[in-house]
Image (cartoon, rainbow, N blue to C red; front, side, top):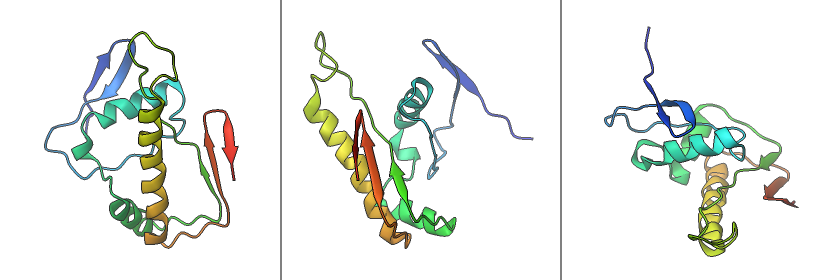
Length: 130
């Protein structure tokens, strides 16, 4: 039976530890806007070389796994750290850059996987866009 080593980072416990040699992994994180999901995303993103990240790679994984979707609900969102001593939205340019890339990579992966949803519902922050 395989075991997973975990570690603590601040108030967060039970975070996975990965061997540096592990590459080409994929992860699905639901509820990434929540406290636990957001922190898990940050932990996993500390080693981006470990994860499949291009639209082509994501599309091929979706295709291989037989993922089909008539509807897509995109709730992924990364809250960028605010500038030191400033308010939550003080780093709006970086927030737009990061979240635009997140959405673009996902959207570019859909046709590669032959996924043609009827609508795509985008929600970021407190807004909805159809």
